[in-house]
Amino acid sequence: MALQAVPLNSLRCWVQNSPHGRQMSKGALAVLVTSFIVRRIYQNVKKRRNKKKMQKKRDELAARKKNLEERLFINGSLMTPEREAIVTKDIKILLEELRSGKLNPLDVLEAFQAKALLADKDINAVCDFITEATAWSKALGDIPEEERGPLFGLPISVKECFYVKGYDCTIGLAQFIGKPAQEDSVFVQALKDLHAIPFCLTNIPQTMVSYSCSNPVYGNTANPHDLTRTPGGSSGGEAALIGAGGSILGIGSDVGGSLRIPAHFSGVCGLKPSSGRIYESGRRGAQGSGGLTLRTGLYSVAGFMSSSVAG
Image (cartoon, rainbow, N blue to C red; front, side, top):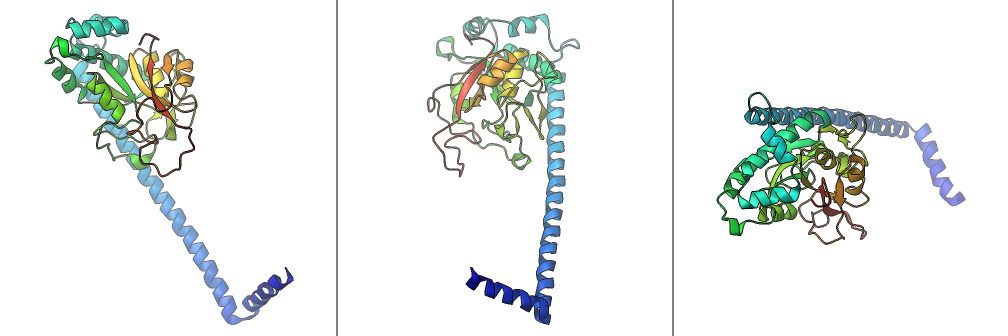
């Protein structure tokens, strides 16, 4: 230790007593102060830029929701008796009537869109509505009855962490705003192949590491049974929307309770499949999604949420 102290003491004496040493000391201090100031300025500029991005995103979403609401109004009301009858049907009956042609996929979609819009005013569960859902529902009408899939015409809500082509997948982070997914996730595409209709994206806590449901981009989601309480997380938007009747079946994800906890909090049913049962690529933070973090063997898995066990 003594051998190491000699050079350090000598250096200290040189800095204190030598003009060059004092000049270097002042220069080093100036560099440190300058770098600190530059860093603070950069952080403030970035924070302001992120606030503008988030506000622009919220304004765009509010405009889209308003446009959809105006399109769905019938005699000044969103929920008609016919729509109320649709959204309260048992899922098995709903699917039977869709496949048989008794119900039109477009009518069912608009019923759940209307109910979701109405519920969203109180609970703030919907991040965005998938505008292409209307065209998808109309296209399903051309499929012969014998070729209709098991989920024919069923509107399905989607947790915001899943990639849906053309839509942001932010997980509540401003850095992902304005970077829409280029392709559907494998899970979402599989549901579409079964003739389901993904119709909205639902809220999550920031980075999905929370048992509540709030983030700076989309705000806070409330429990439909008590607006002062949380619906749970991280699939909180799904649980809240299904609990409020705005969706009958949804998809979420779970590693430490993210399907099960919000299901319990919101009075709905959640299913966490065995790890690897459903292919994970195409979801922010999932195995196979391109993350650089070395996995430990404890993986998040995609699963379902519904208003009932039958769903």
